[in-house]
Length: 328
Image 1 (cartoon, rainbow, N blue to C red):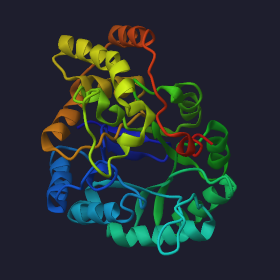
Image 2 (tube, helix red, strand yellow; image 1 turned 90 degrees about the horizontal axis):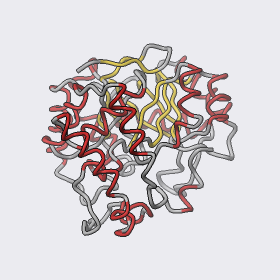
Image 3 (cartoon, rainbow, N blue to C red; image 1 turned 180 degrees about the vertical axis):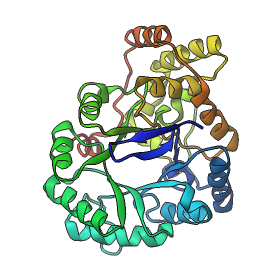
Image 4 (cartoon, one colour; image 1 turned 135 degrees about the vertical axis):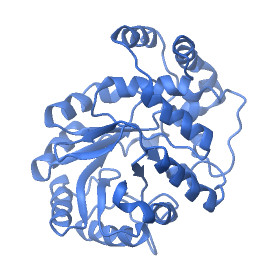
């Protein structure tokens, strides 16, 4: 697979990464652990070098799974994980990016990931109680100590990114971005281009909706957070079907699936955008990886954007309480 560079520090990753959250968190009953370890290793065999996890996934167990899967291949892969919540014994689960917490998370994550260095360490959500300069300064110290290689932010607002970058250069911003959620285009993507920051879209397939396999009759199992998301009510799913129909129409012309067109569209936006679709199935992994070989022309992109502009997506992406934590 072709490689892309995130940030001005030269972090090289595969053009499409693998989001590992759903392998045991927020996507229904957890699949067999050994099967997920095998899937991660099959991704490596197919050219994926960029793997995303977080301490909150599980919590903790997703990092352990990823660490075990990647340990034999550590020199050939890039691992991204995240800090930013008050977890563990006595934890509240609320945002916590105090310097002492960041340092503790780094040490704990290193053990679970079975590595000496975290390649990309994101603040998972902005903590309004801690100045972002203190967060960036703490990660700068961890970089100086060799525990972290690169600093990232997830779901941060433009001013927060700029302030953090002034203290410690930000390598990547991870935020939701896809054909059915395009808010980053207003201020975040232009800022990334200005500052030389890479952009990592999570949920690039709209939490599975853009694959075309979900409709208003789909039932979500226990531990699947989509059941609580406003954009995934049966009414919203039915109303948002035109987005999938658009992708299917373009895919029909290109010999590609809706999911592949959704990923190819992201890749064509900027050379420093690296989506991280998640999956628990080998055939979906291979489908996603193949999207890196699809070329969308400038005319294709204009056609998609023009058609998408005629579609109004229904439903907020998060419930109100959770939405308050993003884009600060």
